Amino acid sequence: MRHLLPCSALAIVMMMAAAPDAGAQQLRVFVDAVVSPVPARPTEAAREQASAAYKAADTARKELEKRLRAQYGRKRDKWPAEAQEQLAAAEEARYRANAEWLYRVDAEPVTEHWRRDIAVALTRSGNTGSKEHITSAESRDQAHLIVTLVGVRNPGAVIKAAYDRCLAVRLARGPKLSAERFARVPGTWRPRRAKAARLAGPDDRSPFWQFDCCGLYPHFNPDEAVANVIDDFVGENRDVLLTTGTSQ
Image (tube, rainbow, N blue to C red; front, side, top):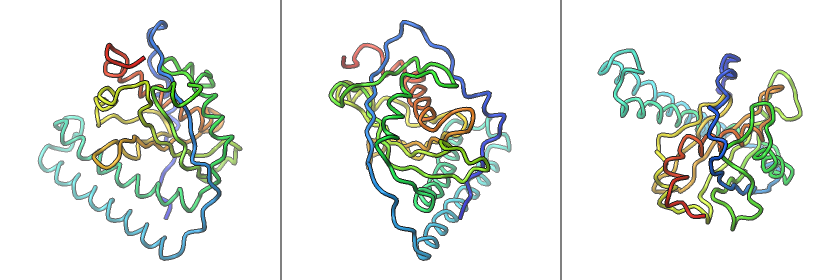
């Protein structure tokens, strides 16, 4: 079961975020990792279960889209915001079902070197520009946000580059950011970068945001893809994260 499709090359031109105020406050980000070896190869029963979950999510998405089109017309951008979010959530559920399988069947070890690379990428321009809204935190105690690497997979790209991998990360609040501020980030927020997708937003069961961030050789490495998503998360939500009321 391999359904994820490569992003169009045209999407690369949309990777760059708008340049922020040079003097704007940066949030400190600590990078952690759930270091682990490659998991056991999934069984045939596990594959069938994952395939059924994907098909169920895909069927639900198709039925919802058909219903919403009948109600609001074919032009999705003209639908009410609530209807657009309904379909986006259904698409996300389908993507998540597939990604969960890929992080099992194409898994690679989660190692300390990946954690270090992400931490370095937070303060490095790389190929996609400076990360203006974030900087590295030396410890969890000093962090506004905590990024935890929980999975590494090899997407089997046509060009076998050393860093052409995908990383699954969780984004949580750190001690230096109030829970009230973190909770005010709109639950509809999603990355708009090439090769990056939201796996889940926070809800009553989990306080984490979860993202799938992939490298695209030779344009950017997966660690830079993670840094870009976190930088955008802060930059696009400055009004609730960086104004008066945020802990220092």
